[in-house]
Length: 340
Image (cartoon, rainbow, N blue to C red; front, side):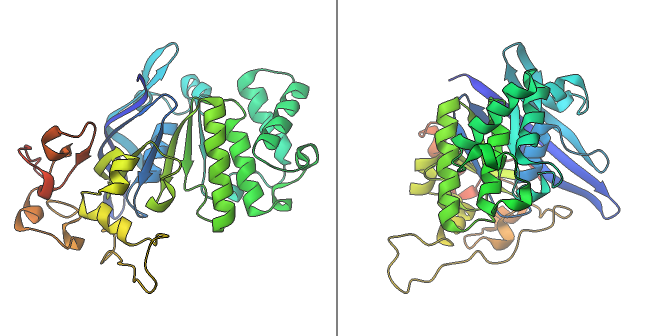
């Protein structure tokens, strides 16, 4: 299928008094039309910074896109978002209209002094160039689509008058109100209980299919991607360490980090009393990335070579699996190493 977004060798650094933080360091992935890609990893691995770079929201200073391209395939042609002025007319026409984003905590994104309906109306009027009456009808329609009861009345509610789950649904409604081609969801269900989490995920999946929208879904939990993602990219300390179809990744994770993420979550088939296996240690600082494989200090299968030379992201099993890639010396095959 034709790609909608191609991220190639993306690098995002932050320059502070402590030094240079390599938040994103050579990330590659692509999202096809009407496809869902889940980017999975612990906090501090660069997932959200990658999303902000796609939206043109990395603030300079202290952050800066230092390398790579973000190729967005518009109907008018292909543009490199990384080279656009974040405040220029091109990005203003794309951000919130063609590419929209849902953040982890809706109360940090919703304006507390305006009603939910007014905020959706503002986005529709700005990007769709329609009258306010038509924009309000669209706002009510989207609130109804995400499962908010009595949407005509709730459109006049302020954010603090809604529950956490309803606020997140309102954010989904706002993000989809202009029918974007790509929706970025950054940990959209982390603050919700499991029942509401499942409901919001179901709403997002159904609306994605209804509006033919591609989805970039960011999460730290591999357990929730099975029913929403087509492909998975596992990210660790600014790099993609494994990627492939959701079925391949969940059935047979290859990288020790992916295996660790899988082993640290419970499943319905676990026997009674089974203990979860946490990943030892924490994600290192992006100011001081270890030499060689960044996961080596925490890896239970580490070898001497892992500490010395960084493995390249290469085809798994010598390229026998279409699209399956892993950056690990255990599966490197004949890959040419990339020096740290």
